[in-house]
Length: 163
Image: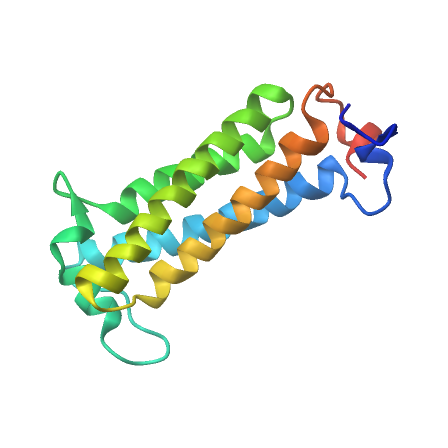
């Protein structure tokens, strides 16, 4: 169990339990699956996601050369990433903790790159892409907390540690 100042992090009242962090990661990854699936489905129909606040940023981003990698919409890669992050949130143990952190770190880095492209190359902002970037940032924080607070702790049953 990780320790800070002689006290176990999982016992500190201000540090969330492993179960709470995993539930939050499960929820956020599920939202990410929804966002990425919506973008991918909109693209497969030959269109773009509808911008909720109006404007044409989503259409401009979807029409850009950056929206596909090797002929595949990048939202499909995001969908795969969110599904893998969901799986790591549902599993216990250090393997899942470190895999979740690694996946979230890669997803966050790619989200930063895509946001850079939107701002400085495409000159348009897709609200759905920003939403996905925010979700990936939250997943990075949650998975980092899981690694910092619980690396080395056995993946015990929810009843024992997940409260």
